Image 1 (tube, one colour):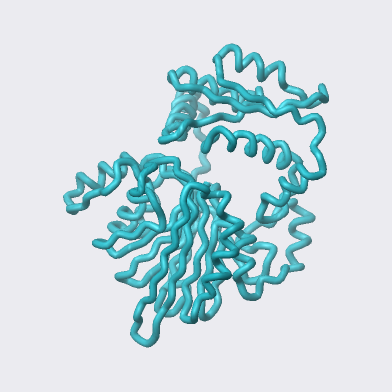
Image 2 (cartoon, one colour):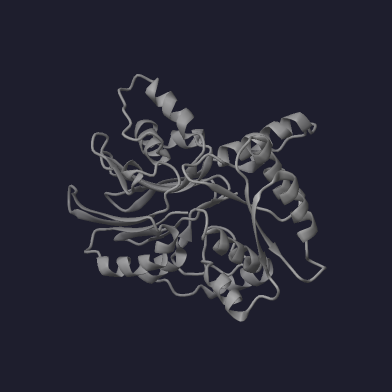
Length: 366
């Protein structure tokens, strides 16, 4: 997961404060850190831009995948966290459209997203298959777009005041550079009732989430929201179709296949249950190298090592297990500290430890 933070303001930007806040995000993008800054002359005044991007290189490992990505010809810019699984298909579609477009990269989904949005605007979002959050700026129309994937897998937060727009993929970093970011005590009851902070509001005043499936446009001339809508809603897909096993298997296999495409090795969680075992079997049947990681417990009530070992043996995976005898106090604090907001699910601790171990060996895990 990459990470970014930025501010667009009619006033002078405190760059040092943003750079300091970005230290909380650098762990998300250890491969490369880039800064973009600019001053735009508007009709009545000037607007300042300061953006920082921290890259985790998964596809297009060359400089042609670096961000913030700016296209000099189209005069557009993007900061994008996530992965567009069908980017090569969409790239071919653009190349065949006779629009005279050329791509600098061989495999960059960031470049595909930048060019697609530049050519087709927000309608291009409907073509995307993947998990993403992005900030897209069109310097020709002086419009900014904030968008998040259909299920909200990738985070995006923003703070919009009368004279500035601040945004980040990390809530704690954004809180450090935002005005009116005191705790919103009225939200405590939501958390105690639901164990999460639902909706677009966060635990901080004046800081909002971009909702899953939401697209927000901001006019840079005024720093006001000009358009805001949900481009995808699961309610529109409810029906009474009879379950089709073959269709389900096709969708499952395709989902696993597109998530396995990367320019770096990919690992998999393995709990020994139906879900993770199905993914491992699919990877094995596709003649892909299978790299698995598990958390095992000494407590027989929770121990699934018997089933894990059966899967490891049958599909000959490269396997590593973490023995979670009893989480230490530090384990719990570290796991909670990795979250932007409190999330009352005890699985946070083993998941954190598992991801921490995987990160020592791989950049991607299914």
